[in-house]
Length: 136
Ligand code: FES
Image (tube, helix red, strand yellow):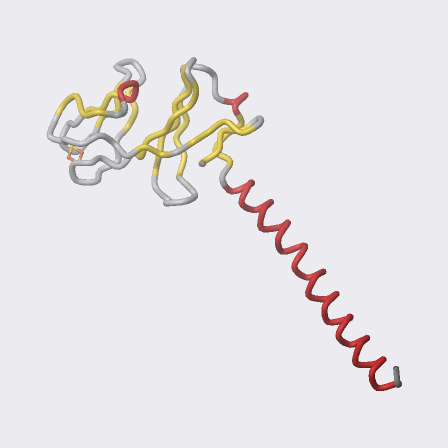
């Protein structure tokens, strides 16, 4: 190996190391960011029978999370009639639209139980992951 080959080899190795080192933090920081941004609420903050309104990270839409004995589920709060934002009436246990009066049953797949809406609210995928409810 002459002096020129040694320098070239060192430069190649240095370049490869820089690429390897620079990719590691990016990969880990992206995973950490993904995990952090999909967290909805700590499970301990949502009792069985409780609800929690949030904005989805993936779609940026208002949503409501329910926790029952069976687990967690969530729906978009955008009415399927003309797009108003529904609200949860806890005493009636219904999602109600203030614009034209549609009602949805969250315990039956958010099916419309009163018109004019004819289709259920969109389901938002959530799951329990460790101590958190996350968008999945
Ligand atoms: S927009 Fe909800 S009932 Fe019309």
